[in-house]
Length: 208
Image (cartoon, rainbow, N blue to C red; front, top):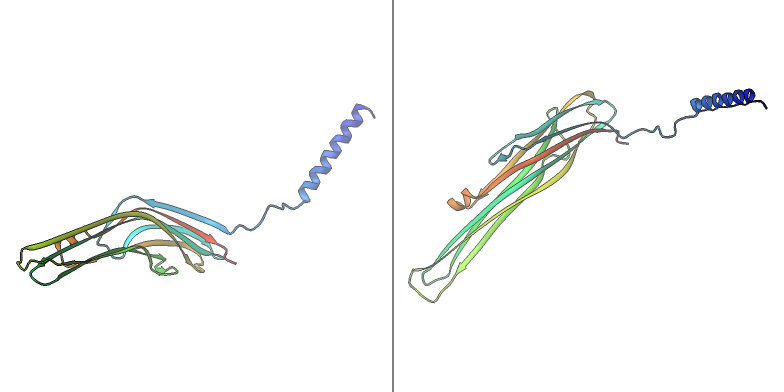
């Protein structure tokens, strides 16, 4: 075989292989569950009290054949305080003090509440019972106990909304605070709920 014949044979082989590649199906082309996604974040703190307060929002254009999965993460800070004062005057004296702080989250898609509804992201009840007893009968013995707790952590929850249709959908996240406690200046001044950094992810899923 001459060099010219060898070149012609190699060219013909390349043409045949190229034609085969055009007709062979792509085995990697499969349906992908997640079709579209949107992201958002905010770092501005939200201080209690707040009711139905917008925390974050985003939009996603859905195809009409899937559901919407919404992931919301946020930092949640809680302050709780108790203050107990008891005085002994010949009988046993008891004092009870309590405070509670919490943050709840609700997600809405085009104004409709996404499943599973309102979710608790953080909640703490602090209660202290103090009993004071002494041998003296003079009303001069007194004890005061003040306790303050401050914590901060990040939590995540997945919400979902079924069959949004083919449209541009608006997703909104709302937060509610719970702040309550014994009628005491120390307790009321030092019981608080705070929403910190937060992120929002929105995806369309073909849920089988």
